[in-house]
Length: 272
Image (cartoon, rainbow, N blue to C red; front, top):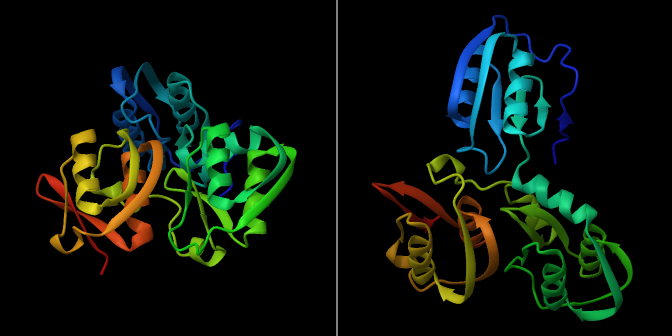
């Protein structure tokens, strides 16, 4: 995970010259960010859920540091420097989940159960979606007895089962360490033009992929179809209130499927 730096004093924030003037009246953050990126030449992005948030503020001959700070303040969000010339306002879903898991305490007393049962319990006490990769063989038992953070509980669970965990696609993703290395940290479908802030739940229990696609279309209004050869393929996912781009990654990536833009909708296909 890349280390983020909360931007405080902006000594040498960027080398871009020129000052920025603009009056934003009930303007979306996305629109203001595009103007700043074009003017200063840096890369400013938004955390999840902020694309349509509207702000009203005035930039008068603002330097790059002043403009960045002013927009973050107007959005009531923190500003992060990802690397030189790359910034983000607000946190993304992955960082939010890591923060929650590091703060949430869980009480464990003589817990001895299969890993999938343990994960269901941990999900219920943390409110965090937990997904065990389909490639995980069996359902090994794990033991816990202590008060610990949710992150520590996940470390204990996965170490005993000789597995690993990370946050992928908006959920806690449990798999082998080798398997996790093959998976992207974020949804590979973010650039396809899917609604950035649309959320959905996935109550899928051995559902065929065609039914899953129809369910997502009905739940989100986004037209999603599948390649005919995948109609009978089955998936099991139980995730609540995840971003649509993450839900599709969770549904498709672990099984080797992909998503492509087609006309006014999207089609699920086997990854070539």
